[in-house]
Image (cartoon, rainbow, N blue to C red; front, side):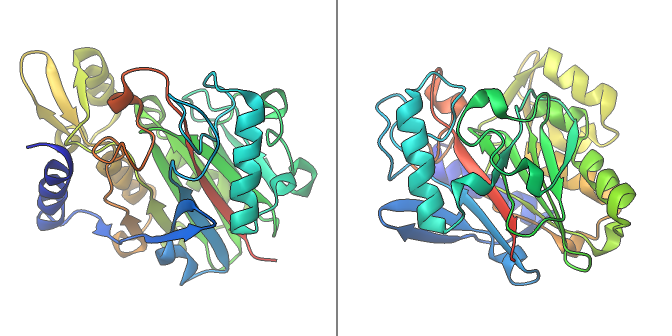
Amino acid sequence: MAGLRAEQVIYDIIKARGGFSLAPLIRENINGIDCWREAFLEEQAPVRAYFSGRAGGCSQPPYDTLNLGLHVGDAPAAVLANRRRLAGALDLPLEEWVIGEQVHGNRVALVGRQDAGRGAGELATALPGVDALVTAAPGVTLVAFFADCVPLYLVDPVRGIIGLAHAGWKGTVLQVGTRVVARMVAAYNSDPAELLAAIGPAIGPCCYQVDHRVAGAVKEHLPWAGEVLTPDGPGHYRLDLPRANYLELLAAGLKPEHITSAGLCTCCRAGTFFSYRAAGGPTGRQAALLSLLR
């Protein structure tokens, strides 16, 4: 199997096995910028939730064209121009963005209006050591960057709380999603059974082969390792990161009907999304954005 056919077959199997709900994102093109709207969240809570694509920016190869990451070697001026284009297209002002450093950990930062603009204009002002953000502040936009890792959007529609996490394999093993839920509970008395979650576009098991080192960490830390690892030749496995995070959110107390996944593999769709695995080297980053309406 190759490309989109591989992706479709894998996710058909997931759906048949009773995995997470696959909710198609709504694709929009605004002033030449491709982006995807998380309608599952927006229809049930007063939020704006988006995932950007790679088209519509000004960055040069290998970051072509809407690279939003300042940490990948692209020209800073091009990245800032791209961020301004996306912010303008979505009407989510750049000065309201809040960004974590993203170190493939599980640290969660509680942020408010005082943090607006952190990391938006320069890498040095991003929240250090942070891979997940939680806020109750309307208008503040939580932002994280991806090129295969899993975006986790979390929304408390009852109390008006949102969270956004960056979950690569390390963050998944460290259960960053669980940490976000726990922070929402501790800080705002959220009820996990009332939370909504969306798993954004990420590398799928169709494309994500890992070695024994990664598989060993998954087996050591995740009780559901047997459900997300499939042997794939001597010393290698296929790892299903989206499902691993789905099972983690279930364990944290979310209801299965409150969790959805985009079902889009960034590696299969490397012409549409940035994919570190597909590029085999430097590439750009797309963004997940989540904001409470004022």
